Amino acid sequence: MKYGSQFEKVFKEAMKSPDFWLEDIQLSFLDSLLEAMNTKNISRKELAERLGKSQAYVSKTLNACSLNLSLKTMVNFSLALGLKLTLDLEDLESPVVES
Image 1: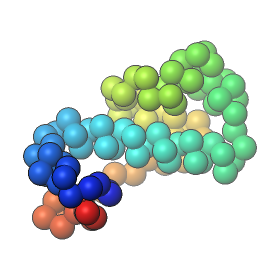
Image 2 (image 1 turned 180 degrees about the vertical axis):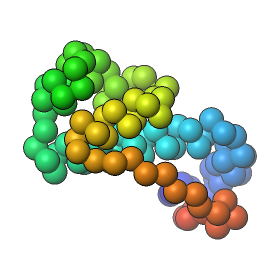
Image 3 (image 1 turned 135 degrees about the horizontal axis):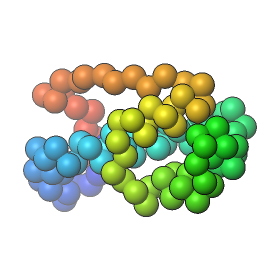
Image 4 (image 1 turned 30 degrees about the vertical axis):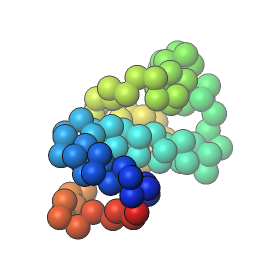
Protein backbone atom coordinates (compact mmCIF):
# COMPACT_ATOMS: atom_id res chain seq x y z
CA MET A 1 0.00 0.00 0.00
CA LYS A 2 1.44 3.38 -0.97
CA TYR A 3 0.50 6.70 0.56
CA GLY A 4 2.13 9.98 1.37
CA SER A 5 3.67 10.57 4.77
CA GLN A 6 0.95 13.11 5.62
CA PHE A 7 -1.59 10.25 5.57
CA GLU A 8 0.48 7.76 7.56
CA LYS A 9 -1.25 8.48 10.88
CA VAL A 10 -4.71 8.31 9.28
CA PHE A 11 -3.96 4.98 7.60
CA LYS A 12 -2.44 3.48 10.74
CA GLU A 13 -5.59 4.41 12.64
CA ALA A 14 -7.89 3.11 9.87
CA MET A 15 -5.98 -0.17 9.78
CA LYS A 16 -7.22 -0.88 13.30
CA SER A 17 -10.79 -1.11 12.00
CA PRO A 18 -12.34 -4.37 10.74
CA ASP A 19 -14.21 -2.28 8.15
CA PHE A 20 -10.91 -1.18 6.60
CA TRP A 21 -9.83 -4.79 6.13
CA LEU A 22 -13.23 -5.91 4.87
CA GLU A 23 -13.13 -3.26 2.16
CA ASP A 24 -9.52 -4.15 1.36
CA ILE A 25 -10.47 -7.82 0.88
CA GLN A 26 -13.47 -6.98 -1.28
CA LEU A 27 -11.54 -4.58 -3.51
CA SER A 28 -8.69 -7.09 -3.88
CA PHE A 29 -11.21 -9.77 -4.78
CA LEU A 30 -12.82 -7.55 -7.43
CA ASP A 31 -9.40 -6.72 -8.90
CA SER A 32 -8.53 -10.41 -9.09
CA LEU A 33 -11.92 -11.28 -10.56
CA LEU A 34 -11.61 -8.67 -13.31
CA GLU A 35 -8.07 -9.84 -14.07
CA ALA A 36 -9.27 -13.45 -14.34
CA MET A 37 -12.14 -12.43 -16.62
CA ASN A 38 -9.68 -10.60 -18.84
CA THR A 39 -7.22 -13.50 -18.89
CA LYS A 40 -9.98 -16.01 -19.71
CA ASN A 41 -11.72 -13.65 -22.16
CA ILE A 42 -15.01 -13.89 -20.26
CA SER A 43 -17.40 -10.99 -20.73
CA ARG A 44 -19.80 -9.66 -18.12
CA LYS A 45 -22.63 -11.09 -20.18
CA GLU A 46 -21.06 -14.56 -20.18
CA LEU A 47 -20.32 -14.35 -16.46
CA ALA A 48 -23.94 -13.40 -15.81
CA GLU A 49 -25.10 -16.42 -17.82
CA ARG A 50 -22.77 -18.71 -15.88
CA LEU A 51 -24.10 -17.30 -12.60
CA GLY A 52 -27.72 -17.42 -13.69
CA LYS A 53 -27.96 -13.72 -12.86
CA SER A 54 -28.75 -10.60 -14.83
CA GLN A 55 -26.01 -8.68 -16.57
CA ALA A 56 -27.04 -5.64 -14.48
CA TYR A 57 -26.34 -7.58 -11.26
CA VAL A 58 -22.89 -8.58 -12.49
CA SER A 59 -22.07 -5.04 -13.66
CA LYS A 60 -23.20 -3.55 -10.35
CA THR A 61 -21.04 -6.00 -8.43
CA LEU A 62 -17.98 -5.55 -10.64
CA ASN A 63 -18.27 -1.76 -10.51
CA ALA A 64 -17.89 -1.98 -6.73
CA CYS A 65 -21.28 -0.36 -6.21
CA SER A 66 -22.23 -3.09 -3.78
CA LEU A 67 -19.21 -3.44 -1.56
CA ASN A 68 -21.02 -5.73 0.77
CA LEU A 69 -20.05 -8.97 -0.90
CA SER A 70 -20.82 -12.07 1.07
CA LEU A 71 -18.36 -14.92 1.12
CA LYS A 72 -20.98 -16.97 -0.74
CA THR A 73 -21.16 -14.35 -3.53
CA MET A 74 -17.39 -14.33 -3.81
CA VAL A 75 -17.30 -18.13 -4.02
CA ASN A 76 -20.07 -18.16 -6.66
CA PHE A 77 -18.26 -15.62 -8.83
CA SER A 78 -15.01 -17.57 -8.46
CA LEU A 79 -16.60 -20.89 -9.39
CA ALA A 80 -18.29 -19.31 -12.41
CA LEU A 81 -14.78 -18.55 -13.68
CA GLY A 82 -13.52 -22.04 -12.89
CA LEU A 83 -11.51 -20.78 -9.95
CA LYS A 84 -11.34 -21.63 -6.25
CA LEU A 85 -11.40 -18.78 -3.74
CA THR A 86 -8.73 -19.09 -1.06
CA LEU A 87 -8.06 -17.09 2.08
CA ASP A 88 -4.73 -16.39 3.72
CA LEU A 89 -3.80 -15.00 7.08
CA GLU A 90 -0.95 -12.52 7.35
CA ASP A 91 0.80 -11.02 10.34
CA LEU A 92 -0.50 -7.50 11.06
CA GLU A 93 2.80 -6.59 12.69
CA SER A 94 4.60 -6.61 9.38
CA PRO A 95 2.27 -5.26 6.66
CA VAL A 96 3.83 -4.03 3.45
CA VAL A 97 3.54 -0.29 3.94
CA GLU A 98 5.46 2.23 1.85
CA SER A 99 5.59 5.94 2.50
